[in-house]
Every structure is written in C-alpha cells, then in structure tokens.
Image (tube, rainbow, N blue to C red; front, side):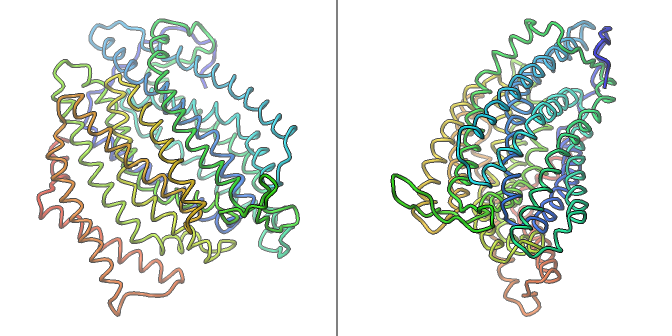
Length: 570
C-alpha cells in the first residue's frame, strides 16, 4: 500500500479509448463466473460441514452486515455519485491537460475512510449494548458475537468496492472482478482445514457437533478480516498505474467532494431503505424461525402477551434462504451485474451530452441484453433447481428435507431473476442522469410491498420460509416495471414498443425451452435417480437442451442479439 506521506502530485494517466461495454462485460462476466464457481464450491463445502445448523445460520446473518454497508457505501451512495463526477474530471484532464481528478479521488477515499471508521465504532458499541441489555437465545448471541468480530470488515470491503470504482472509470475491470476470488478461496480453505483439525465428521453427539462448528465459524470470521486486507493490497499496483495516490486524512472537504455528498444523500437514503429491507428479512428469518438451545434441543415456540406462539419457520431457515439466494444470484452476478458494471461509465459519459441519442441506444441494448439473459435464467433455474441443490448441497450435514425447503424458496427467487437483473441497469441509468431520487422512492415502495406481502405469507400459509422469497419476487417485479416506464418518459423514449415485442419473443422461446425440458424428463433414457451421478446427468441434459432450444428459438424469431453485439465490438 502506498505510503501515507506520498503526496507528490502525479498526473492521471489518460484512459484508453473506450471499447464496447459488451467487451468489458465479457471480461467481468468471465472473472465473475470464476468467483461464482468458487462461491458455489464454498457454499457446497459449508452445506456439508455445517448443514442448516446454528453455526452457519449465525455466520450467514453476521456476514450480511458488512456486505450491506458495502452495497450502501462501496457500491452504493458514494460510488454512484463518485463515478460520474470522476469520469467527468478525467475527461477534462484528457482534453485540457489540467484537472484535479486524482485529488478528488484521494479526498473521496479519505472521506469514506473517516465515515466507515466512525460507523464501525458506533456499531461495536451498539452490539455490546445488545449483549449486555437483552436476554438472547444461544444462537442469537452467537450471531451478535460474530457480527462484532467481522464489523471492521466494513472498512475493508467498502474500500475495495470504492477503489474498484476508480479502476473501472479507467476501463480496468479485470482486477476488481477478480478480487472476490480471494475471499472464496480463503473461506474454502478455512472450512476444509478447520473441519479436519476439529474432526467434525468424527463426532456423533449433537451438542459436541454444535460446539465444534461454533469454533470453526469463529475462525472463519477472523479470516474474513485477513481476506479484506489482501483484497485492498491486490488493487494497489493498478491504482498507482492510473496515477492515483492515497492521501489519508488530508483536506477532503473540497467543493467536488461536497457536490458528491449532495448527490449521495438521496442514493444513501435509497440504498439505506433497500438494505433496511434486507435486514428486516434477515431479522424475520432469525426471530421467526425455530432455535436451538445449548444442549441441541429445538425451540419450537415463543411467548407473546402471555401466549405460546409457534415459530412459523423451521430451524435453519436463515441458512436455507441464504443457499436459495445464492442460486439465483449466481446468474445475476455473472451476467446482469457484469453488464451493468461495464455499461455504467459509458452511460455516465453519454448522459452529459445534450443529444442523448447514444445514451438511449446504449441503454436500449443494455436492457435487451439483460432481458435476454434474465428471462432465460429465470426459467432455466426453475427447471434445474432440484438436481442442482442435490448436487451442490445434499451431503454431510445437509439432508433431503433441507433440499426440498431450499427448492421451494429457489422457485420464487428464480422467477424474479429478470427483475433483479433489470434493476441493476435501471438504477445505473438513473444515476448516470444524476437522478438519485427516483431509486430512493422505488426502494421505499419495495420495502413496504415486500414486508406487506411476505409477513402474511409466512404466518398464514403453508409456504413458511418460502414466503420470504415470494415477497421479494412481487416487490422487485413491481419496482422495475414502474422504473422502466418512468425512465422511458424521462429521456424521450427508449424504444419500449420494440423491447416489448422482443420480450414476447424471448418469453415464447423460454416457454419452448421449458416444454422441451419437461418433455425430455418423460423419456426412457432420462436418469431418474437422486445420487450425484444422476444429478450431473440431469443437469447436463437440461442445460444443454434448454440453452439450445432457447437460443435457436430466439434466432428463428429474429432476436439476433448476439450478432448485434458483435457489430458493436468493431
């Protein structure tokens, strides 16, 4: 890491001529795919080592907290406001040879550091107060302790995300996309080695198993901090190559930083509302699911106003919902987030022009590409969910009963992949237009609708924990449709009529894909077992057949998206 005293001015290296965002999306997608594959391996190892037990459920919730701050600061409010301003400063330097781009970037990083250190201290005090003043179940107490250990990771992961934004403006996408690989590798290594050292498979006593698993998640929490340091160190050489220099705690209260903060307020509120929604979901999962006492006995009810009330969700709901979310986030991260990340700098630059023809064209291509991938991923994941869950998770402490519960939640999450994907690019389109208020209003709508839908479903239907996924599906679908309609009006039309026709073709192709995959399952040669070999064959057949039918049907109906993107690369 650069020495804090190194404050000599270094001219920013001019960014290379921009390539098509599709090329960048492919680079990000490949590296994100590598990270997601390792993430899949991580979750598979965790399922075998911990199952849907107390320790992994506690770790899942605790690790959510720093990731929420990453989305709020590192990839959210400050980053969304910073990238358009920094891109403009870089463009001014390239055209005139002057400009305070590096000073602005360094001041922004210093400001972020101060904010996050303060939040970490306040957060630790709050957690200490919760432990001291409340009577918690053992599994809830473990969640609080793990959160306290990993809370400093907020500074590390947000710093990594923000510094990655600097590199993305300079069209350096590869290393930021590769950084998460480190965390996954460390997670896998700690779990495998830790399970061997603690001899987890050698114990059959439930209380002893929980004790050893608890020891292992403590180790895992400490190694999260080590991974965070390594992720930042990994970015430093590329940052220096762009001309960026760290200037810790210097004069960060500059006019450009003030402007960034003013732009960040609505985004922060929007992201805060959205992350509040995530926390509500996690909180409901923790406090409405069955717990386990110190002896390993399941706690099935709680007292409310003098009455015993049954928990509506089974023990381990937090962990199972986490695995269901991982399954739908896999295609989301590989395709949608990669595309949205790659297109954002281009949209930010094109939105500055008085003639927004190119902005509308890029946005139209981005939305069409997102729908092309999102619709296929939604239907495809529904079709392959059960064999995928068996193959990835059903071993060790993960039971067939867990498979069915994860499957039920995955179906609802999968049905919303197109909406989750579209939200990524729509939010960035609004931010590129310096409109940070609309995403805020939409986040409030999502919070209200999500809570209003999922709570009755959890308590009043047989869905149980799957009701949480159903609420997410409804709220996000409504949000993106509304945002799409308003954006069309805002920029004078983005070709909604054409997008609607193309979407109908994609939906038809997806229906044909579903029909072909359901049909092949009735043929004599289709493997019907539940072992790993059968699951691999089922996945191979369904994925190969589904992809072939979908792409072929789209091509026959005139959805020539891939050829259009090849032309954009020239």
